[in-house]
Image 1 (tube, rainbow, N blue to C red):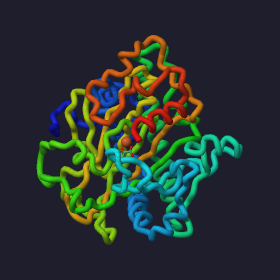
Image 2 (tube, protein in one colour):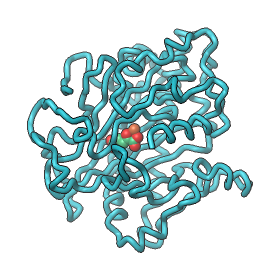
Image 3 (cartoon, rainbow, N blue to C red):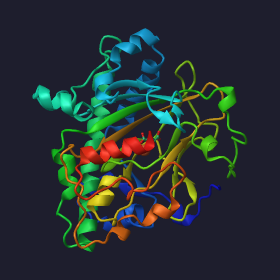
Length: 371
Ligand SMILES: O=C(O)CCC(=O)C(=O)O
Ligand SMILES: [Fe+2]
């Protein structure tokens, strides 16, 4: 397995002002999310991003290093750990994942619906938020500020995606992705704390340049290979902190986010601090009939002792009722062009997706296939 960066693996960057001004960026969307793209782009110049990122990301470490009995107050089994604190409940390379902890909440709506029966039935999607206000008073507002900013920029990116897909496929429902982001009350954000790697997890050869890695599991020691299964994911540039919470330079250049491109080459994605990254998800892949395609990605642990990684992902996704139908004019082989290059452990779309499914069923099948 090799990592490499050549010119085709450059991450596309859009400017927030161009998005606001409605400039046609559909060629850039093709380069990023189309069949030869990396499945990721970044947006520069989003207002307030630096402040909101600086306010939220250190709270990830602060929460994760609270005493276990304090964190336990925010564990929510009834939503399958999809709200509040989740640590060791997901799997990484087949074993319970203690490499990272996540705090999940809906950044837009604290209680999206009132119907208690529906809340019970679809708790992972729609349970009311749980906030650690007693222990970290500023947590909720920092989480919502950054989450809502990312969704608002995501909506602008979605509009460009819709125009791009529509130009290639006449029976794509106009504004499909924009409508999902605008109307769904099931958006989910995840504040991630990647614990410092312990000695036995340290990655051989970490520290310099392009690396050949023999073991895929070592590679993805912080976050295993996966495709995002929602519509559009927004992601901040990660912050690396020492044990005292000081923002430090990531001095292991090999640590961080990697994407596997369409030809199987693994590409490191560097998100500048003042950009928001967006990754296209499998639901948008299905709704666009494969005109946009999700890419597998993973996070490689740091070889530097005592350094944690904090980041924030916002999963813009439909409600559980949304139909997973592809445009009629698209054949199913086009829908999953990249399946021949999936890393081990990433199940093909065709093994999980059925056109008559709704998003809730697709999510259950997908999580079952990974975990
Ligand atoms: O930590 C990251 O940079 C990526 C996290 C991620 O891929 C996810 O939560 O789906
Ligand atoms: Fe992801």
